[in-house]
Amino acid sequence: MLYGGGLWRTWFDRDLNIAGKVIIKSTDGKKLESRYWNANRPLLKIPNLAIHLCREEQPLNKETETKPIFASSVADSLFSGGVEAISDDKFRIDEKHFHTFTELIAKDLGIVRDQIVDFELNICDA
Image (cartoon, rainbow, N blue to C red):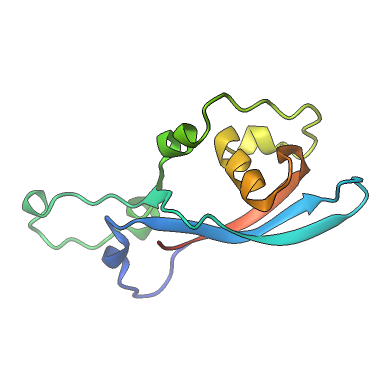
């Protein structure tokens, strides 16, 4: 939920990055550890209506008009082949997230995708 009187329109039509904390299983599967991850590339954008189509200054609905769009075609183009499903997906990673996105996280962290348990990510300016 968004609060306050921020300058939300400054986030429109700019390249946005994703960064945050990823919880992973250790290689032996007995411990959990956290790692910080930064995509270091623009993956999101909050689109805006062209200025000539939006002349009236209307109040911004922060709940519906500030949802970022994930460039899934960009993530898909990063990987030449399809991403295999996780065989024992007890944390439901495949059900909750894009396969290519979790593969991107795993490659950047130098782990296999089925080690990812969950993550908490934030959007930042690219």
